[in-house]
Image 1 (cartoon, each protein chain N blue to C red):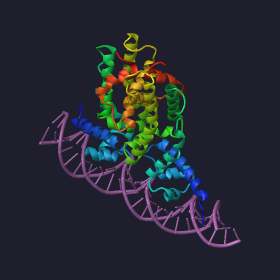
Image 2: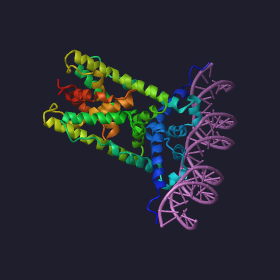
Image 3: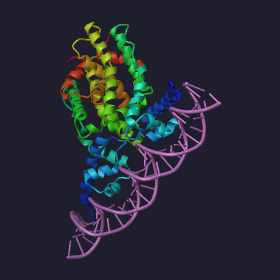
Image 4: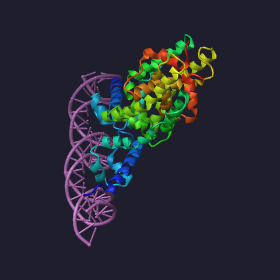
Length: 187
Length: 187
DNA sequence: AATTTCCGATACGTTGACGTATCGTTACGA
DNA sequence: TCGTAACGATACGTCAACGTATCGGAAATT
């Protein structure tokens, strides 16, 4: 009996990468399976063989490449940990395999419940550790007291995404410390 | 000779409103002229008669309804003026004729140069007075010195948009003062 | 009242993607 | 080596929107 034909995993990878690239280029509404097949150099029957709908394909692509999105939050002062997280988010937002898909996902999340579900889950997973570190820093007196960690966190993340989505620039990861100082005060 | 047939302006208004509603519902990529015509209760020939492409229709719709987006920045302390602006932006983002179109526009701006151009211009027009007021407040000592007004402004706006786009909530306009305090410090 | 023009409706052929099915070919496991 | 599974290519009918053209009727101007 066959254990697992390596051709399956191989074409799976090619197709998922092509799907992300296609999503970033044409957006959610204009995303077509035929284009993904052409881009991947694959017969479209191969795609239909593995995914029933375009949503399943897109969701699978994000699940698959999501691993690397983890920040190291184990060592250092709250400010140091926060700076590492902020820098990491800024890097992902400005340049990663996901970066170009953000507008498409925002649009998709506003239409398709499935996209909404997994996109907001990803966002929450990225947001929570950041808020926790801010709360920890306030408790230890590293940051100014009397502020809502969730609100401060949203201001920091918001600045990064706003730059990417509403202006022509991206947020320079080297300005992570400055952004933190602006919102949470000097050390 | 006919000066101006009022039927033109009447159907124009109906079509532009329908276009915004349609854009908010289906997004940029899935936006079709036939649907706009059906929604407006209008023959599609009427739309093609006035706009050659869907981009022209969308751009025209935004130009037309953009008037009301002006904040009063004439009186009061910098902090009071800033709070008025922030509250106003929060209201527009959470509930206005444009509100539901924001995801579609972000997506459209990433694909079509024309959408990119006018959307980013609108954003800049909303952003600049806010940054100016922050700079004024720093100069007068109302806000803490040593911060970049543009960065602080982006953090404030970013918080509002982030809430709307990356979480399930909107930003409560009544928290405008708290948001300003979080980023710029207490009075 | 006469005339112009703008309207909604409808029909048209074209295009592109849908999802299914078939068929040799190729690469794998036994 | 042999059988099988996954592949690519391709053809198929369906459907929705495209953009154009035509038409009678309603509403405006004169």
